[in-house]
Each structure stands twice: as structure tokens, then as C-alpha cells.
Length: 206
Image (cartoon, rainbow, N blue to C red; front, side, top):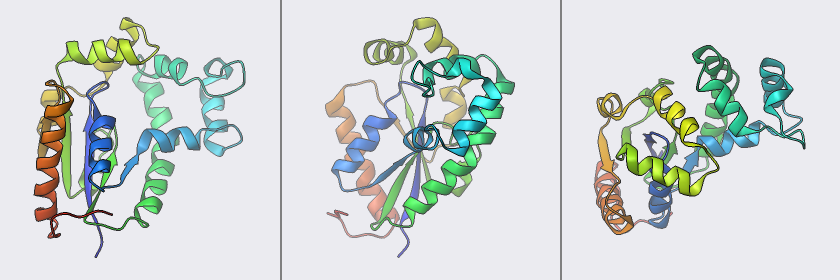
């Protein structure tokens, strides 16, 4: 039986990766679009050369690796540049995700994709799960966990779809602003619902 597809999305700092990890603890595999993007953009790859050609050597660090922060600052302030990068990376990311998905065994798989809705890939999902969080909490998390300046974070947030717009596409939602224990409870409850939705016995481990 082919596993179901659950698209997981949300704004920067909302806790998508933490939610995916909690599903993983319940035996559900997740495919991370950001991880695949990093793999695809390593030096020597076609995508790496296309990115450097499109944006110039200014987006590289001293070791000639792609500097994701510099690239992010470039694209999140410029819709045209963002679309250029998406055109380079989105097709091979989706191709790789589907290749990995073909190896998944179990009731369903999590597709962790920040631009799931904007890219239109939500249409290929059986369920769309949106993670929401208060912007102030998201800002604090990002300042604590990433080497980003407040202005850079605000630029990313402004460029992304807002929570109200995302919610219109959601089959399921998690509000992640009440601590880790509460998040575990919410993910566990959703897992039970997904097992039922995909007609799978309870207590599954992949």
C-alpha cells in the first residue's frame, strides 16, 4: 500500500522541524526540502553552478561554499531573484523527494516544505499541516538559535505568506506557542488521526 503524503509547512521559526522530529519519534519518516536543497547546492553540482551564475560570487563564502545567509538576504528582498532561485531548485528538490518517498514504508510520510503552498505542491498532498506561532515567539527563537539579525528575520517573515493566508489551505493546524510538552501532545493526537485517515492499525512503527 502506498503511504499517504502529509505536507508540513509554516513560517520561519514556527517549529516545523521540531514537529517533524516528533513525528519521527512516532515512527513516521519525514522528507526535508531544506536538507535536499543544501545537498543539491554543493560545489560541483549543476544547481551550484546555476546559482553562482545567476547571483555571482558574492553569495559564496571564503571556502567557495554557498553562503545561505547571504543568498537569503539577496532573495527575500527581491521577488524576481527569489523566483530565479526557485526555478533552479524546486524541480530537482521535488524529484529527489519523490525518489526518497518511493522507499518509504508505512502509513504516511511527512513532506517538510517551507514553500509548500506558494509552490503549488500542496495540491499533491493528501493532507496539509500548517504550524503556526506568534511572531514574537518566532523572532525570539530565531535570535536564540540562528546567526541572524532582527532586520534579516523581519525581511524573511515579510516575504513569506502570513499565517492567516496559510490557514486557508490547511487540513490540520498546530499552534506551537505553549511549550514542548504541549507540542508532543498535539503531534501524538494528529498521528492517531492520520493512522485512522490512512486506514492503518494503531501502534505503527516504520
